[in-house]
Image (cartoon, rainbow, N blue to C red; front, side, top):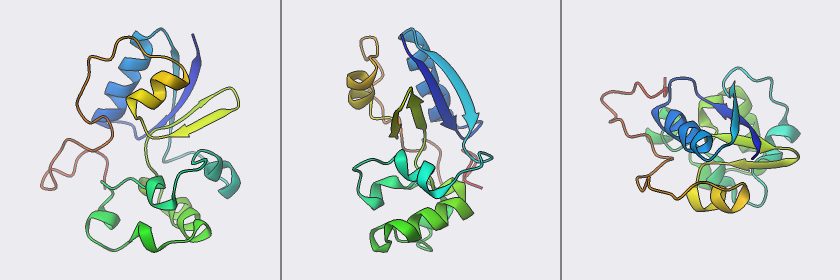
Length: 140
C-alpha cells in the first residue's frame, strides 16, 4: 500500500472521512496542515495537473460563496496568487504519493490512482456538509 501525504484543513469533517477511507484501504496517511504549509507557486500548481483553473478551488470558501472571487474569471497566475494569500481557497485535500500529486477526493479517481477498498461511502466527499449558518467546517 501507499504512503499518502495528505494536506488538509485540520478539523474538516470531509478530510477526516477521506483519511479514514485511505487508512481502511491499508494506506499510511501522513496528515499535514494545508493552511500553514509554506507553499511556493510552482509546488502548489503541480497538484492541479490538467485540471481547469476553476477546479483548483474550494467552493466552500467564504470568498467564493459570497461572490468576492469568481474562479472562472481567473488566470493561472492570478489563482495561485490568491491561494497563496488565502489557503482556504485551495481545493482539499491535496495528496502526494511519491512524485504523483492530485487535488480533491473523487473516490473513483483515488481508487484508480492508489486503490481503495470497495467504496461504500457514496456521499459527496468534497463539498462541506455544514450549512452556511454554521460556517465551522474551517471556512473562516
